[in-house]
Length: 202
Length: 202
Image (cartoon, rainbow over all chains, first blue to last red; front, side, top):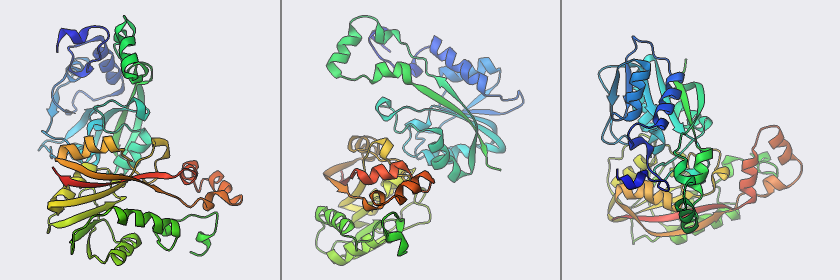
């Protein structure tokens, strides 16, 4: 990460940044929603990241990382089955989401829980790194129902953006006038991520 | 059945029935786009349907069907063909990348994959469509990762049965009763936009 990208006027990927206020606030929001018991075995999908480290601290639990080279095609079954599986902001990046969720379903016990989060915005505001952002009704209908899963609870979370980079100085205005791309600025106000508690359908 | 063809009713039974001039015109647009070598061996993705039977008869070609119980998880292991047809299939599938990879396995070196996809704004997506990808999205997220390239593409329009929504009070009552949706009505008023692609291995 170059220092240039920390300057106001530059947009950067929050997930690969060192720990920020945004990370802490997001991890707090997630920690308020998820309720693993101290005895529960917990897995997080993906490699170790700032958010999972903060969650370990806030929830005071051990989290195993489960990952594959390519979530679109690889199977990532483990011998151990988990009580709780975290899957935060992965789904929207995948072109084979049903395949991925089938693998995630295979990781949980019969009474296990999947905590899944994914953003949902209008198409114009989608990130270039996102294949598909879906509402909870579409997730339930197209991805969970075919696998016999069900959303039990959901919560809307504000995505914490470093707003200063879009509002301070002349550079944001210059970029807006040269690219006519209003999405980064609109994203400050209209980006929401939804977190879901998912279980097997009874 | 007879009742369903009266104005005020739409049904999926007549969706691809080429005895209607608007459907025949649409299928002829697809036929005019195809560029098949003499005696080409072709494979159609999905179950047999009236549209493909009409195409076979009109073009004088033999077409095999690939119709497993669930296309989302089906692997293709069979002989290779000069051309693979996937008309109006990919938008219904949650594992689009998986399926196009199977199509790639089914086509010979130098052969073509013909894919037809609707590409409308999200608010006009069909009720039974998972994702209507636009040209750049389709190329970036589905074709590029598989090493496929678009050789030719053409925009085509599909005129829905306007009469079914315009004549009499019955269409309005049907929407108010929840048997049909405003979205379906809007789709019939506006021409639904499709694009057909000829794709080869790059």
